[in-house]
Length: 378
Image (tube, rainbow, N blue to C red; front, side, top):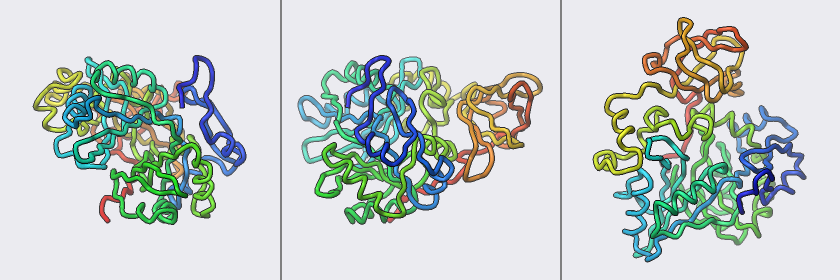
């Protein structure tokens, strides 16, 4: 699926299926995306928490990366020059969350990568954010001239929630054997579907790459299960916010470092010691001395939600800004994430949120707001 032309909205492969289910569409990162369905955002959110929501995330970019000479050492060396990821000890068919950094230590994108090793050959599967597709491809090809970096032309869906395992295992029992951040090629309705046990809701679930010729049939079969319902990007956003997960372009951007964003864990020890990844000078200085600001959770003390752009105040002084915020269906109250000066980042600190010109009290809160429920052991 190609990136849409300037000013145009691209339709995802399953647009007609979503329309038939009554989807309300909206523009997102250049794509016409299902935002919600007739049951509404809150119902979709709670159904995902209680059973299983099926999200179409085909707007995201899927990449297959291989060495031009097919040598695993070339693949690993080139990607380690481009990303702060560590290939040493990275097991076959397991997934990692990583970052595409600039030389100033800022985040150009956040990524999901799977390392696939088959004897003397290796490849990496990567998922990038929709709004950064073209920029990521250019930067990877520039930094990794000895690699083939190509799009995978397939749909992508996320099946999330406590009923996800049973629903997917009904099509291929091998789905049940995966643990969080593991991958496998499942056989769904006769089609090979690259699948990871992951997602961005905080719930157990899977992200499934679907061959275009079989995508509608597979999604329809999953929806035949009464535990599975379609859910749109609106519910995906409230779920990821409850889970304390960042949204690129809001909580992450090219000026924000992994240390500020509480993502220091994405840079493994060997890479920190080697100091050889893009932006290492700033990032390691902040790692050692601490950043000037930090990403935090915030719970307003009343019912008024603090959304992106709201100033965070202390004693009449601006100490930060909200980057994501809204109403939590699970907690039945408002929640926000944002960046504050490090001196005010400890949980329990009381701050003010400047909402429509009125300071409203709030409390810095540990993340996530709702505990994750990933399946780490089988």
